[in-house]
Length: 286
Image (cartoon, rainbow, N blue to C red; front, side):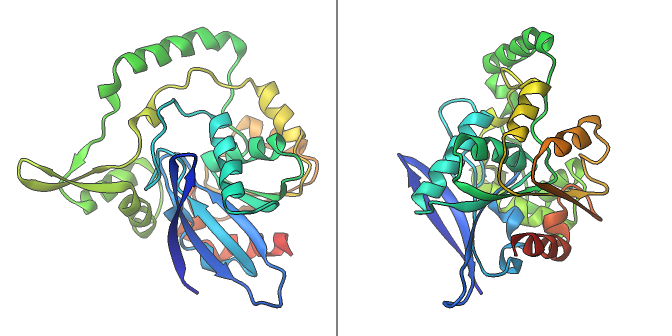
């Protein structure tokens, strides 16, 4: 089975995507849309795509990431959730399964709740809803947002002499195998000429690193999770970001029709060791 690349046009916004189709004409196929994490891209699902049985699987680059267009506005969970639903419509999918890793898994429940009945099943990988804040923290957050917007050069992309140098930078920021880092980094880099030399710089939109103007409260996050009506599979890594967070268990217990599976690995376990993740997903889908 081959993995193909293609683009979608969402009212003038290009969304780049990868696709793997693995089903026979006599089988009823699953349609699965995959949403990656913050500053990742569709390649984070590359090892997983061919392992999902009896499925048409599409992994997109969210706006501002990978080969997709940047947004003129700031990036919010609500805007990303709308992009997810618009992408499914552009694919011609009336119903589908939604899979999200990290940021993608934080966005996914909002997409489910925004379009009741559209998403048949939900798969969260190393995700349990977005970070929350107390209401009285909003003034400080507004100050941080304003200061970041006044100094956009603060987050301009670094320049690297080689792809390997960029991979080493990513490995300092995240626990993952070098092979995993290479998959993500190679799709996230663009080649430039600087001082008559070939250099590499990040494709992602620097605005993604600007402080958010507001966070949801914990009550708001839990209200969204409680409103998810479709079956949910949550895959956590035993050395990931969520197993030790105080709010994780309480949030997952709110989901009405949820199942939690904990597997060995770090935050990017779905790319580091895709087989056990795929096994859990295939069991859930059948």
